[in-house]
Image 1 (tube, rainbow, N blue to C red):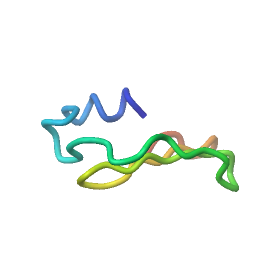
Image 2 (image 1 turned 135 degrees about the vertical axis):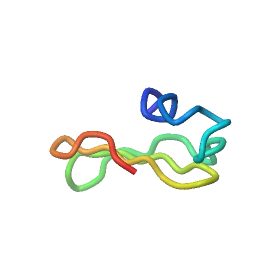
Image 3 (image 1 turned 180 degrees about the vertical axis):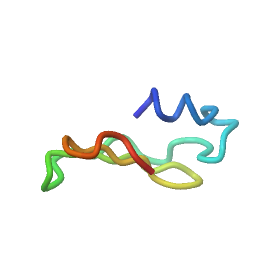
Image 4 (image 1 turned 60 degrees about the horizontal axis):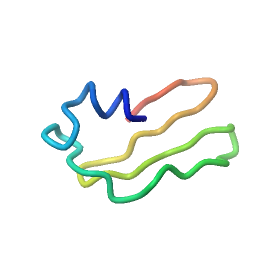
Length: 50
């Protein structure tokens, strides 16, 4: 998640600051993290995506 957030400019990018920690244990083995401007998701099958 940090790498993806960094590629978007960290807090100066479109997502802004994180507003939650990583939440894991999703049905597909994935995680997500919420930011001021959106959410970064991760799954074993899709990788990291917005």
